[in-house]
Structures are given as structure tokens and as C-alpha cells.
Amino acid sequence: MMSLGCLAPAQPPASTLQLTTHDIANRTGSVVLTCDPAGGTHPKRDKACAVLSGAGGDFSRITARHQACTLIYAPVDATAIGTWRGKPVSFHTTYANRCEAGRDSDDVFAF
Image 1: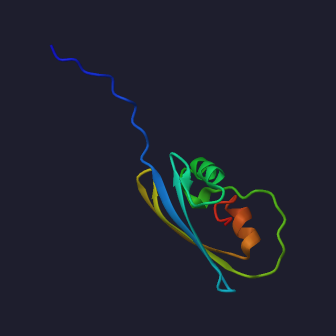
Image 2 (image 1 turned 30 degrees about the horizontal axis):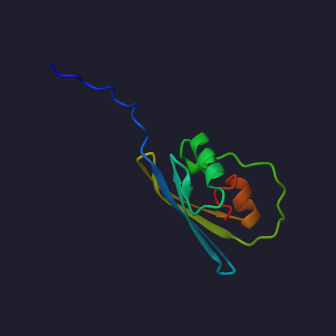
């Protein structure tokens, strides 16, 4: 007689994103964010993973946190490339300044 062991519930595929920022002062930031479990080089990886989980991995659905930022225009290009739970991600936007990049992405682009 053959015995079948219990199968573990399927885990969502791990998520790995390369996040970069580039501003007009030619400063470039780049980190790796992995989720499920949280890891990588992102300084706020636990929060960034929670924010992305809440948005279903869709950067356009991230809710900005309440924070005042200066009105100084110093554009920051932000890019995310990789996979979120097995699905490809390619996101690019420009924020008015670094404060807005952190606020509007709820710290995903705060590095």
C-alpha cells in the first residue's frame, strides 16, 4: 500500500525587485528588495514589502502617507524592475523631489 504524505500549502513565489533612483544632482541610489520573506539591501525592507503587499505589487496603487514636503523642484526618477509573486514588474515614474519620492511611495523609494 502506498502512502501519500500531506502536501504543504503552496507558498507564493518570492518577489525580487531592483529599485533605483536618480536625481538632477546625478545622485543614483540602487537597492534590492526581496519579499516573502523580506530581505535584500533596502534599508526599510519590512515596511516596503508590507506596502507592496497592500498594493498587490502594483506601484500605482500605493497610498501616499501624510507628510508635508517642500515645493522645491528637484526631480527624481524612480524605477522598479523584477518580479512580484512570479509576475513581471516594470515601473517608472518621476517625483518632484526626494521627499515626495519617499512620501508618495510610502518609503518604497526612500533610500
